[in-house]
Length: 201
Image (cartoon, rainbow, N blue to C red; front, side, top):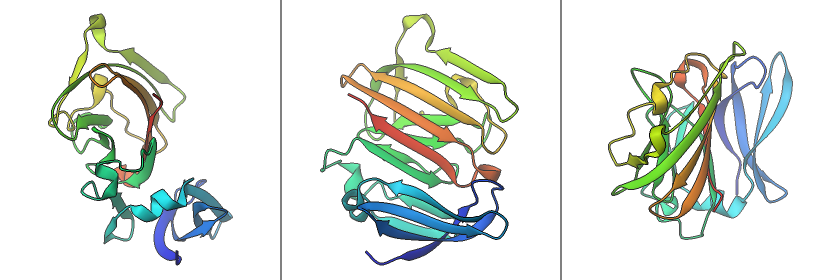
């Protein structure tokens, strides 16, 4: 795979800096150099073959996303983890579960189904860059119904206003007998938010 240029964030000062995606030791790497903090590398994907099978489209230098109509949509390779830097409103998709950062109201993580409905229990905990945190689970032991239209509401009505605010959700999909972990970190101005979805079972 040839290298390709993009824009990324310095992991220390969050400055937008030029970056380059390339393959190294079977992994896809993002290399970037901050004028203040020097060269940095981040792993984009531990599976180069999966990364190469995905379709990315460019809207502007700092926004790349997974095309849900591409190979990742039907999960033909039995992929168990996807992650990406996405702007608010853009989904990361695994199986029938998709996640995004909400675009208005309480700015947090929202989940939806790709099609149909599934019921699940959800537990979550989050940390603000101020050092405080939150935790919650679905109330009363009642399952939460995930539909194609639930992707515009922040779970538990949580709002994360600052870059580096982070959250982790555990989702027990009762309908499909699967268990997921979703991790998110808010980016500057809700751009380049990191979202990772892992199917654990």
